[in-house]
Image 1 (cartoon, helix red, strand yellow):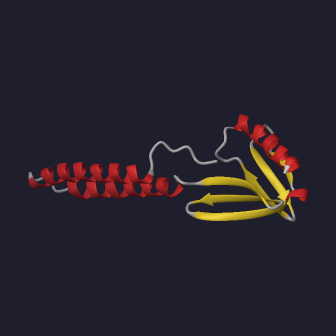
Image 2 (cartoon, one colour):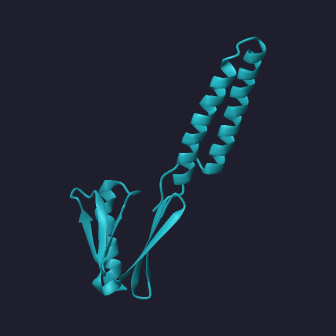
Image 3 (tube, one colour):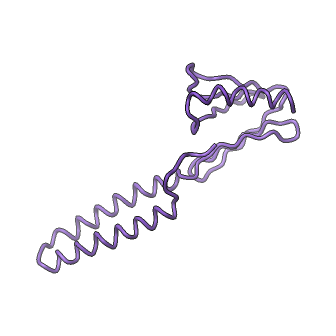
Length: 139
């Protein structure tokens, strides 16, 4: 399961570069015409937009991966480039909806708990719970 992003980080970088070129071009022209404060404010604006784009780009590749490997349920969660991996023994794992109304999916076993489903629509989370339970029984 991945985050639904309409713009990739590379596309965002291209958009930001073109925004910088246009904004600094206009600000440079106005600065040459005597409007001295336009250029510093344009630079400040571009720094703020760049920071927002950077935050977006860091989380654009966030994902959750669920796999059955050698009798284990393996859950990998990637957030801002960091991967958290949790392994559960297939026979001892419990899969439950957490928080009612299908808010999140809770995977428990062996003293650890992981919550899944950040990137799924709430109405699809019960379907995922059924599919994981089926895979655990049939594996």
